[in-house]
Length: 321
Ligand code: CP
Ligand code: NVA
Image 1: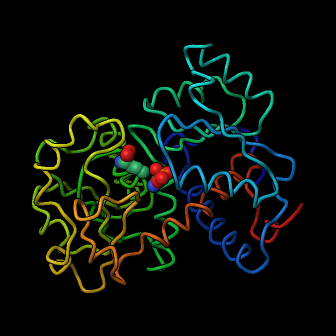
Image 2: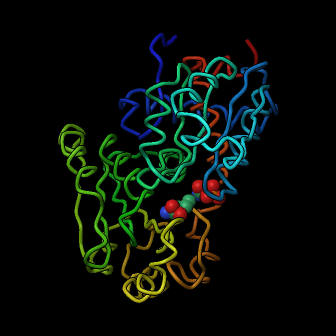
C-alpha cells in the first residue's frame, strides 16, 4: 500500500478507519519484531525534526528513540532558537524544513500552529500534542487495549477528568472504531463542542456512542477501561487552584474503581499527579496499565513514522528494505 498523497497526523481523523487499524496492526508487528530482533533499518538515512514548545518526557524520547530504532535520526530544535512565527514565518520555516528532513514532529500550545505547519510543509507533520489534540496518545491506547482486550469495537472507555486534548483524541479513536466513550467531568469542563460535532458522523458510522455525565460513579459503572489525565494541563497553571477544587470528586481511587466492573482496567497518559486525579494505590495496582501504554508510545509512533514517511510497510518487511 504505497501512499502517494502527503499525509499528516494533526488529529486522529487524518487517518481513516482502515489506515488507523493498519497503523495499530503495524505497531503490534513492530513491537514483536523489536523485542525479538532489535532495531531495523526501515528508515535508514531518514530524519525527523522535532519542535517542542512544551515540556515532554515520553513523546520526545519515544520519537527520538523510535527514529533511531528504525535506522534514522531525530533532530531536536530548541523552540526559543527557531522562534516559529517570530524569527520567520511558519510558512518559510515549514518550507525550509521540508527541503531537509522527512518529517516534522511538533508539540505546540496552539493547535493552529501545527495545522499551519502542515498547510505549508511538503513532508508529513505529526502532532506531538497541542492544546486541542494528542493523537499519538490515542494510538498508544488503541494498541494497549488490543493487547489487553483483543478488540476495540464495542469497548466502553470512561474518561474521568477534564475534557481536554487527550480526551478529544481518545473520543476520536472511539468514534472511528466504534467504542462507547463516556466523559465524567465537573460541570463546565466538557469537551470542545466543535470537536464533538465533527465526531457525530464517525460515531454514527462505527456504531460507537458518546455520553457525558457529571457523576463519576455512573460514568465508570459499565466501563472496560477508565482513563484519566491531569486536571491542570500545560499552559493552564493559572487555573490550578480553582480546578483542583472543582475536580475533587473526580479522583480515580479504590472507591471509584469499586463502582466499575471487576475486569475494568485503568490507565493514564502520564505524567500523573499522584493523589490528585489518580490515587497512588490505583497507580500501583495490577489493574493500572499506564506503563504498558507508555511503552506502546514508542511502537505506535514508529508505525506512524513508517506510514507517513514511507507509506506504511507490511509487517514482514519492517526489518530492512
Ligand atoms: N503522555 C505524554 O505525552 O507525555 P509527555 O508530556 O512526557 O511527552
Ligand atoms: N492534558 C495534558 C497531557 C499531557 C501529556 C497536558 O496537555 O498537559
